[in-house]
Length: 253
Image 1: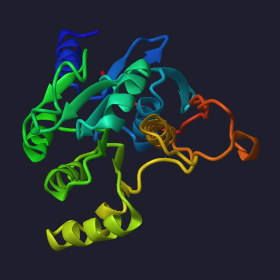
Image 2: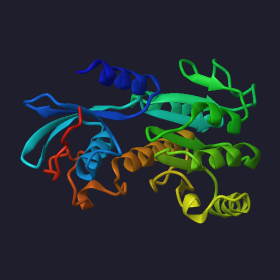
Image 3: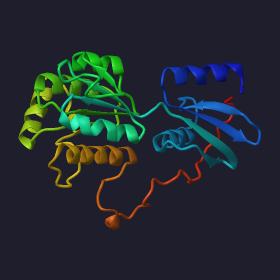
Image 4: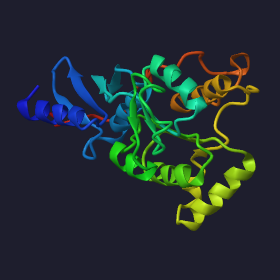
């Protein structure tokens, strides 16, 4: 690896940007992807490797490339230090998510109620600006208070968060869509909101609701619908990236 490429890789990891180090085998030529100058096929293969969070080997124009995925940690931003959050946070942590609880109500957002996770008492829009959700981030709003949930959703919809969910009745979801649309949020962006958040498992208790929401987060990240496995036509586990790709990565070092 050249010093210049190593510096770029280290900078990407410091900035928590997802990147792929592509190495041509056996020659050892390397490139950092995604890269606008690289052929589209291998760039898309790199994006898929990042999405699946899996390093893999691909064939391109008769050449073999090893794609080493460097992803930042998965994150979950929970807006609302409520009872459901107390159930959701430890579940998400067990799945490897770095969790941040956001709630300006200091009586709720305490280290005692949420031990071992980051707690922010900033207003949700300010907290979201600081957290900068990316493609490895899920955002859920739980307060049912438009003064807290709506600004967080507005910021999340401007980000690349892979999942944006909001608790609330169907009537409240429609009201929320109207308010966000009036604030200038495009219709296609509003369609990114999973609301009411969660899979239809008949959840009633806070823990059941948290489980339902986290299951939908996992399904969204895997690109699955979240239905019964016995009715699924795809593999039970996420599929590895195995399809050959076309197009060389010539001259990329």
